[in-house]
Length: 121
Image 1 (cartoon, rainbow, N blue to C red):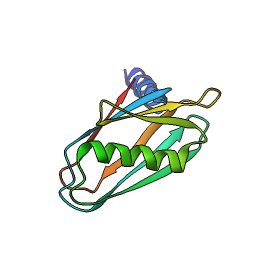
Image 2 (image 1 turned 120 degrees about the vertical axis):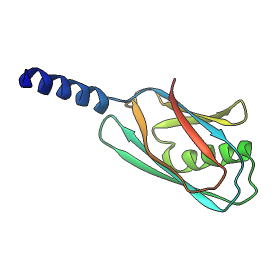
Image 3 (image 1 turned 30 degrees about the horizontal axis):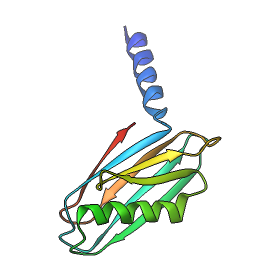
């Protein structure tokens, strides 16, 4: 019985480690009520990790926050991915042809009033 439980845990852990996708959607909600930063890491399936930092000023609306995220991603990770704003407040992250799948990890929002959710497309 313990052996079966161990096998199940290893399978679950292996599945969680393979979280890459060819496209992600970051949904931005709310405007900035304080200055702060948004940080994340693009973790490519080939082992590369690309840190991304976005400085946000107080008073920035959600659509402008999404554009600033897109622009920071373009500036810091354009070699592997394409980035666009969708519906005003969503940022699409798409791998480029020939590049490995990726995940967005360590997403941290240090801006009051701004929330970001991540969805696999």
